[in-house]
Structures are given as structure tokens and as C-alpha cells.
Image (cartoon, rainbow, N blue to C red; front, side, top):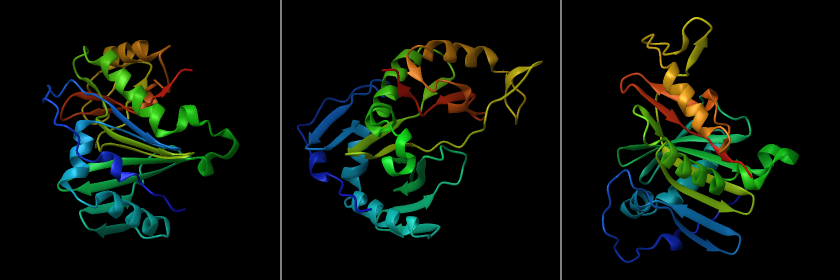
Length: 226
């Protein structure tokens, strides 16, 4: 499948004043059936690595043809083999020392179960953005740092930071805990679930990750309730 990424809509705009890292603004551009939503950090990644979008599309094509890892231009790309949605293509990308997670979602992966208003990158990045506001007051909890969501018809890519953590385990005696350290994190997990309930789909522990070295729960892969 050939994909054209509308890089022209990422061209340099008038400089904006710097804001604290915890304040993130989503910028939206659209042209016909194509749209892109990006943060200032996402735009910087593209601007500081000329041709990286083209490099990704070239590498993606080779990955889908069977190669395990592809290096081209500023980018090294591999198919992510972790546990994930069987209806998505997942990639791990390294660009200028930064590691990114890319989720490709399209109608061809899901067939009749595909619902663009829930499954495409645009509603998902907006859900992450909204969840960030709702969860920012909880110590030791964060939403996956999102950078860019591109959609063309029923095909899309969502780009976030890549995280290396562990699945959160549960048993009837210890509640939620870390596999590696045994640390009990049940109160935090329950609070996050309670806040997400009624606001987002998929706000369950299956879409949380725990990073023991930072004692942090990361929330990812949310969809809106519509």
C-alpha cells in the first residue's frame, strides 16, 4: 500500500513562546481526506531530521516485505514484536538518539470491525491528550508522551515515545503489583481506572505499563466514548 505523508503541512510556522513541558498543545492541519495532529515536540523531530518521514515510509515498506530491521537516512526501523493489538502494525523507530513507538491502524487490518471514529490515530491522540489533563495530578502516573497522528482516509499512524516496562500483575491477595520488585501499586491503579471510566474506552490495566526504575505507571492506547 502506497502512503503519502503530507509533510508540507509541517513547515515552519511563526515561532511560538516556549511553555513548560507539562503544557502540551495539539496543532491540527488538514487537506482533503488527509489530516495531521502534532505537538511542538513532534514538529521538532521532523524539522530537525530532514527527510525522516520519507525514510519511515521506505523502511516501513521493506519491513512489511519481511525484513527485520531497516536503516535508512536518519531512521532505524523494526517491527515491534511485543504484545499488541492484532489489528495494528507496531513499529519501533530510532531517530537521532530518540526511540519512538509507531502504531499503524487501517481498515484492512480489521475489516468489518473497523470504526474510524474510534480506531484511527486522530481520535486516539485526542484521547491521550484529554487523559493527560485528567491524570496529571496523580503522582507516579503519566500518559504516553504523544507526538504526531497522521490520517489519510482509513489509514493512520500514531507516534509516541517508546517505553520499556512491565505488564501489571494482579492476584487476590496482593492486588496489583510489580513483577520485578513486588511493589504494590494497587491504589494508584484503581484511582487511574476510576478517573478513566466513563471518559474513555480501553481504560483498563491491559493498557497500562509499570516502569519499576521510575516507579511510574504509563497509560497508553485510549479511545474516546462517543
